[in-house]
Length: 332
Image (cartoon, rainbow, N blue to C red; front, side, top):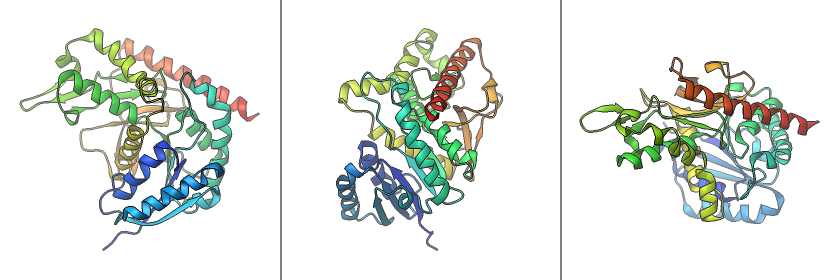
């Protein structure tokens, strides 16, 4: 029996990430090869013509899973009955800017979009915030969409997670699929902590911990971390534009694992509302290692945290607390 279509909202759909993301969704990369979708695309009025062009291309591509396309500049129409919302739209962070520089504008954008989701989205809508500052934008959205379950509001750190996997795979000259269970702790910013203490590499003959097989703690505790932290800036310097293709792909990974489940024995990184796990204060959207099953995520518990990791985890939590205070001051 054919499945009912899932309504997926992409905000900022005429932008770079949106343009890369919507065909992935239509092709089944996000929800699977047998799940029909109805795409809702939202953008601002100056981008209306470009948005219509994206709709035309989606229609011309004749994706078998794509049952309909709603392209609009009206936020209420865009949010109506959506089951999944991927919040890409926001005031962009350009070269040389920090996330705090775009905070005031994005707080107001996410307050307004939260209100629209609150009124018009499906009651069980799952939300992924991509636009920076992603963790704090997600927190604002949670604040102003109180009827959406708190566990249904997340932010994207899967891009950082994937970057970390690839840095290890390149270092060891193994396929990226053989590297498992890195962790991104904290903020999607330059304070994030990419952690390999529990990560493993599987070869044809064995499975070993990354630290053991890399055998270079100096690299793992310095260059590896800063490369992952600063990868977005490096891409902006190279392209003169921010990450688009990799961000879109990672958004699909995030939603797919959330909805369809993580493979047994594997966890991924997601920005979720802290419940106090690992000593991280409640009231922050913080990236943790999670497993997913039946559409629900759970924070992986019981991992050992060494002194080096504790300092890194607390530093990124401190930044998030400061961002939260700044965001709330922008609302006054």
